[in-house]
Length: 211
Image 1 (cartoon, rainbow, N blue to C red):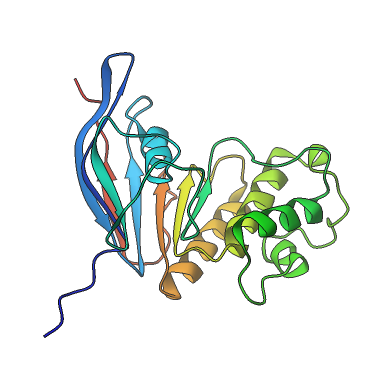
Image 2 (image 1 turned 90 degrees about the vertical axis):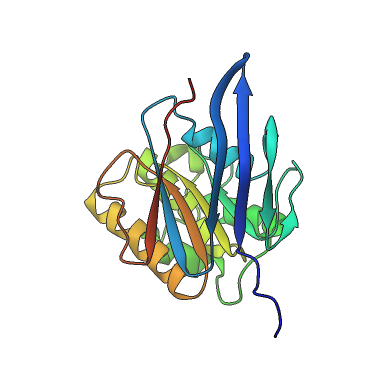
């Protein structure tokens, strides 16, 4: 009998320290294909820091992160991870379409997820030539969601994806997560609100700031 496949993402005894104070200490959890993990906790509990560690943007004080069983090293990104942070990673003087083309050049693109399809999927059809600087906060968030949706990544790391969105936008996020998980992907989502409950197999990780 062949050994079981490793989880998509595994965190082992993760500890992160800032200014000699631990933000979180010895975290251990897994995220597998076809599930979502909600990360909750008060401000300062380390939700954003955790996602940045998992994305390879920060190095933990100790512990390790494994993706498909392979040890991850801090880097500028990984093809199997799509990261959505608090700040919109957009070029203000490029159009919505140009931003998506740039992201595709850096991250790759799923088959059939071209610029027009991505913009339509997030409710920005017709915004191809709109400069990113002229978009509202909610529209910029939708454009970032289009980047994530287009990327050929199995794992989505979404930091407060519901922020700056109206009820329709919140429903969009839930639909995107549900679609991704239903296709065998996984999502790790930080949230303050109870509305973060996509209709998929979901577990919760509650962070408490280390003392």
